[in-house]
Image (cartoon, rainbow, N blue to C red; front, side, top):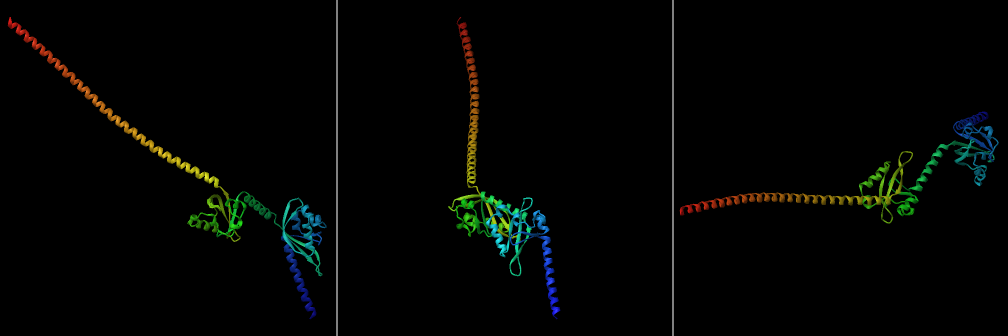
Length: 347
C-alpha cells in the first residue's frame, strides 16, 4: 500500500517535471534565456540569447551582466539598485536597452526572475527576453515625430463625441485659453454659434466618429471672442478593434494670412465694381457720341438740303434775271422800232 502511494507520488512528480521541461523547451525555442548569479555573474545562455546579442556562450559565461549595458548606466546608482532588488527576491519586468557585441543597440522585452532555494534564499536569476528592437524603434520614431509636430503645430485631442482631453501650448496660445479652462468641455466652445447649430457641424462629428479624416480651413473663436482661422486636420485614432477612441487635431494659425486674403478679395471685388461702373459710364459716353454723330448727320443732311435749295433758288433767280433782261432788251428794241417808224412818218 505504501509502495503504491510512493510510486504514485513519484509518478506525479515525474509528470510535473516532464511538464516543466516541456514548458522550458518551448520557451527555449522562442525566447532568449540567460541565467545569472545573485550578483550578476553569467551562468548560462541559450542559442536565442547568443543570436540576439551576437555572443557565443563561451564569450560571456563567467562575466558580469554589465557587459551588455551602456557604461554610464552600469556605473549608476540605478544599476546598483536594480541588482539589489533581484538579490532580495524582487521581480523586474520592463523594456531594457542593451548593447550587442557589434555595438548596436538591442531593446529587450524582458523579465528577471529570482529563483529561491528551500530556505527562501535567491540562488540565481533567470532572464526571459524577446528582441523588440524594431517595435521600439518605430515607437520612438512615432514619439519623436509627434514631439516635432507638437513643437511646430497646435495640437488638441478630443473624445469621439468632441470632449476635450488635452491641448498643447501652441493650441492654448492660439486660442487664449489655459488647459484647465477647456479640458472636459466640448469642442463647440471654439465655434461661432451659427456654425454650432448647423447641419455641417453635426456632420463633422459624425464623420470623425466614423473614422473619416477631415482637413481644411476653419473659422474658430479666440477666448476674447475675435475670430481666428486655423489650417487644420482632424485625425481619428483607432483602437485594436478598429473603433475610434479619440480624435487628434493638428492646426496652424493662419489668421494673418486669411485676413490678408479676405482683404485682397474685397479689393478685387471693389476693383470689379469700379470697372463695371467705368464700363457703364463708357457705354453711356459712347451712346452720347453716337447720338451726337447722328444729330450732326441730320444737321449735315439739313444743311445739304438747304444748300441745294439755295442753289436751286439761285439758278431760278438767274433764270428770272435772264428773262427780265431779255424782256428789257425786247422792250428796248420794240421802242426803237416804234421811234423809227414815227420818224419816218413825220417825213
